[in-house]
Amino acid sequence: MSDSVRAAAVATPAAQEYAELRGLVKGAGLLRRRYRFYAVTMSVNLLAFVGGWVAFVFIGDSWWQLPLAAFLAVVFAQLSFIGHDAGHRQILRGRTANDVVGIVHAGLVGLSYSTWVDQHNRHHAHPNDAHRDPDVDIAVLAFTREQAREKRGPLRWVAAHQAVLFFPLLLLEAFSLHVSSVSRLRAMGVRTHRVEALLLAAHFAVYLTAVFLVLSPLVGVAFILVHQCLWGLYMGCSFAPGHKGMPVLEEGENPGFLRRQVVTTRNIRGGRGVSWVLGGLNYQIEHHLFPSMARPDLRLVQPIVRDFCARHAIDYAESGWLRTYGHVLAHLHETSAPLRAAPQPA
Image 1 (cartoon, one colour):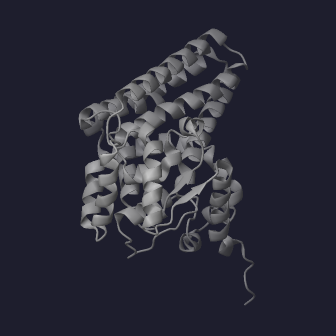
Image 2 (cartoon, one colour):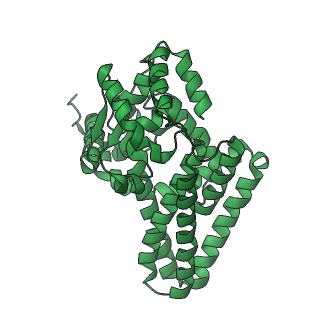
Image 3 (cartoon, helix red, strand yellow):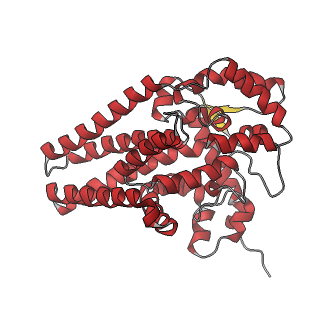
């Protein structure tokens, strides 16, 4: 991931600008590995994962399982953040070692690591590019007025009311991720990703067996809905603020690697608590500029990046947590305005 991103940077006219910033960051010693942080974080996450399922068995067939489902939604999100970091090679030095960590963590939550990495790499290479970023090519949402005009049928109605429906739609995000993992893994070839296919099959088999073996059908369905919906909401609320509501680049726009990453991205203000909740994605600008940087160093590099942007007259967006969602909803409401306009009389 990081090698391809750096190669893209070298190919742009603004390569010298990025090289200057990278030199400052490297000189500050912020391109290192943080083994202790990840060892502790992964250990805590795995203990919470195991502890949650042990508690699941002890609680048994009870509606008290629903608070536990909410707890496991948080655990699944934290495991997913580790998979994200592994995909960017933030954790270990070698690609294979990071991939092992990523595949295992993706398997624990029922996702395909390789298909996610493929999509996420394309997002990082072209953030908020209307034609090349898969994260702004979502069937039920419109991030530009052009996308809104292209909607047809039920999707057109959903897009017209997307600001109101945004958070409810996020409740379906986990189910969408499961479905896309299976479908894209099949398209990429199960044989070439045999381990991932086996882990996915094992996850769904064990998960569903455990739920309906321990719980009655009604409580089991409620547990799955609470767990998966809250996990999806958590993930969507963590990823969306970084780019949604920021400028969307059209065909032919090429401001250069550094400026493209910064002007299409937004940070969220907050301390270490916010960083833990969001898996470090509150430092989205720094993460996009240095995707292989270890998560705990993102807060340390922020002053360097912010000062560099100020000196070079590059817009650096940063908002409070709740205000960020306001930006997202306002953008969705504005882009879908033509769909809500009353039709003109003939």
